[in-house]
Length: 296
Image 1 (cartoon, rainbow, N blue to C red):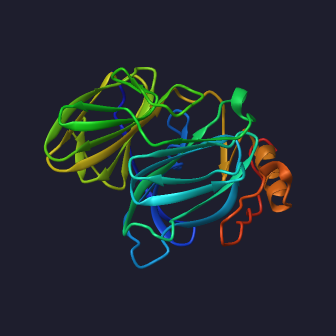
Image 2 (image 1 turned 45 degrees about the vertical axis):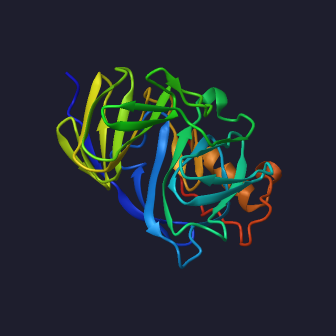
């Protein structure tokens, strides 16, 4: 029999220049769910009278950044030369691999509200140092079932395969209902899963779940009973348990402390490894000093 799900409370933090967010991963009780190693839920927030999101140029290694936007717009710029506006219902996927840098900001002419999720996917050992890349996906597969509109963000569901390129078996679903809805979501027994509510409230396998909480399901479950009585949006992520240890520090995902330390030193020294972001009207971020980490 599958174990009782683990309930994890998100903690509040700030993104960039003042955007409040709820961070569910990493958490001291759960570092990863499959290859998903980072999960921020931002908004919904009124940015009509302000600049909105502003995150200056910063580096990444060993991961993919996965941006899912529900409301608003975000302008992505990176050191490969991409300048891509992401809108509601779209995904930006940036593969850092050996090294990349990027900035994120609300465009000058932005919507009043912003809402979305920012996730990271850890790259496996064989792809850890792959060349950096960027993908924009304006159209994603959609499935209708049980009163839910299900957007397949990553992986495969109900015969539909999401276009973002990933390097380990995983799944990402956005399940939205305009009112009362009920669905038995089929699960892979070899996957672990996490469920959070982005809007409204829901019952997951009979457990009430509200915004700011994550339910974790260990491998072994075959289905997930999802129910809501009003307008609700739920995010489900999952994947095979990740095979190799990973360290997350600042904006880096490393196999050990040496990866983090070398990336930090190179970024702060302006090394060509991370390239240069053009067009952002602010300063690049400085990586904080690295303490002694595992593997050193």
